[in-house]
Image 1 (tube, rainbow, N blue to C red):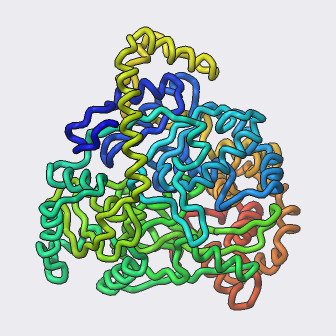
Image 2: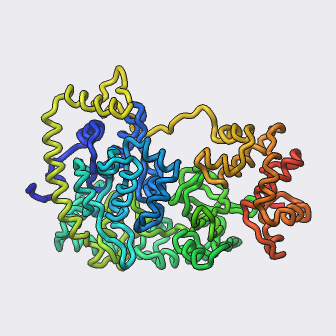
Image 3: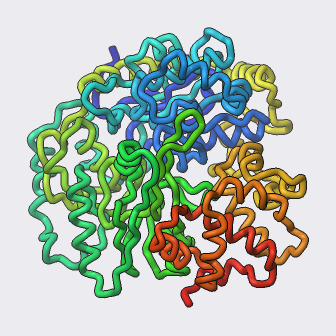
Length: 597
């Protein structure tokens, strides 16, 4: 077996070799130390395949990770959702979902990033569904699979009684038998001490000298008195510590506080479950200057779960957030729903934000930080300390306020598997080195042809330099609003448009609002009126409320209706407002809704 030693002296595989193996059509497990360039390689691969006419299905096990590679969560893409297991009835229902069936049928390549956070049972559920959908008994129904991640990082989130096996412990993994591409060079960490600490944690053998170096960081700074460190991102292992820190920081802002109360409807026990996993607080308290994080993916793709920023004010009673990239976003109410047999049986509504001066180690996975204040005194699961420490670039950027023994541990199962991964990667690297350029080119061409793609002409497509460093979004001839407008002209209902476009109804409503406010007088949605009136029980009372209050802003209307005890949702109010706008075009301007009167 390959001697398991410091990563600096092990030579297994470089990025170019890994990319060539992936292009040749192998099932691959792309792994390596944090900062080795796994996400970069995935983006290179995605870009190449798109240029060759084969668009991979791009997914990840978490919302944040999916944004790094421009994809969706594997739970959403696959149809498994939040289920922990499948019954025969569940499988039968999913196979009758035409949209899901076409997704599996057309899939040529499936990418799953952050595979460490997908349990073996979930991995197996996707495999079962793929085989059933495609009527093919090969692993994943014959879809080429690219898995990426590092099993030394955080394991699958589980509760007592849940399956805590890693994906690599599943029989499906062994049947898939992916080629292992193990990257060892790091582009994140800038000093040898930090590299040695991280490598020693991976080997479950950290020396006393390295322990002393870590513990010395605890005494280095007085966090209560050093104001120069007050804006450094803080990482904690527990949500309770994160909440305490964020509440204290909010209290230090000497500005007016404004808050948003969560609304619930439907079956109480199901609504309570929604509250627990939605991450938005029941009572969201904000001030101008508050650091915040979005906790839901936006259907209009303005933000994702994990997007961070600062509250800079309010418009129309709603918070405006300036993200770290400089984008200004009006944070509108979002809905979380629980469905049974296609019917919504529980629903909650809240602004999808939470305070974010401090975040959990879990939420930091995938981030690179110049500086971080990390408290690992309450680490409770293997890999937690490793993830937190590997976020920073150098020891000079590490401000440690606590450390326990658990923080220096990684899962023994992951350590055993990692030694095997290193061996297999070494063999794959030796094999690719033996192949000449023409052999590689021929294999890539064959794979592209079998999948219905085409090798790029005039390019050496076996060369990784062909790919651009960043994935470009696919171009479309029409804007998303124009696409919706096409269906309106054909007099489709909102529900029909949402189904055709594979979007949520709330997103289609947003498109209609945008189109109505764009100055197009002949954009007529009057044909929708009978259906909307039939669907909204209290339509006439809501209509009267708009006239009574005398404005188009939603917040005052909702307050008025709530006070009267009239059942309503923001989506219902938006639909009533659209119908009123269709009768009175001149008075309907979205910009008027965003201003307080």
